[in-house]
Length: 346
Image (cartoon, rainbow, N blue to C red):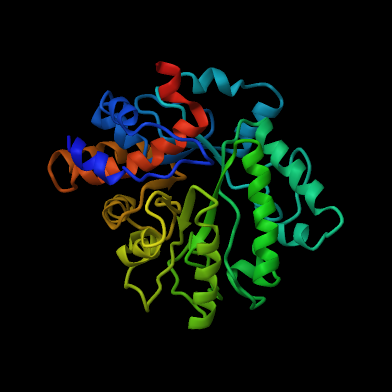
């Protein structure tokens, strides 16, 4: 274990929302874990029941059926989450509008609609966050920061982005993030570095970015504004030909755009088992090597195989363990903020 390297690497690690932790305490905790336990922490897995037979992922995305069962008290999530040796991020992509995971309680408008409801938008956002908290959510994979103006683009026709000036968007999303933070819910901005006017759904096919350089740079600046305000950023499954020949989820050049601005932010890859990713194991390996920290996996049947594969690659030296170490320290700082894992052990 390269402890000296890790101590130096994370010596200037920023705290989360003012929360600080001694680096030696984090290292000592990390050293108690098996390689399989460490690798498992890199996955955020979609689940219908919180049940995992062997390894436990670093994060879970409850299905809508599971959320309904929690709401009707057919399932008590705490009973299942206690079985996790390391508490998971409990995630939701609650954007509102067409991506409304809690519509069975009450329908939440899209962020664009909420933004333009000047009189009630603060109250709507407060209710939105309170509903997330009721289900034990601690990481919302939202907001969408993609800039897009053509009505037929993927982002616009699904009403997933906000149409306004940059300053107005910043002010609104600042409020959105602050309300989440008040309930100790972290946010993940997406889809870095921006969908642009891209027409196709990247879950179905890997498209190339559509839009001029001005739009791209404008969107990049919007993402950068929020880098010091959130702990996670999700990279898109889109190819940016002027940056790389592979999608952002596998691009070292895109990851560099993130790391040049902030070293400790957790980079998440959008679903690596989507229809557009024909070989999810290849995507996992290349995405890991590019510098991505965590991987959304919407097909839970692949989880154990993914853990086994990544563990094998590290054991064989095909992937350096120090790369895993760097990713885990970013993740664990966020978990310590949420769960006080180390303080509770001391």
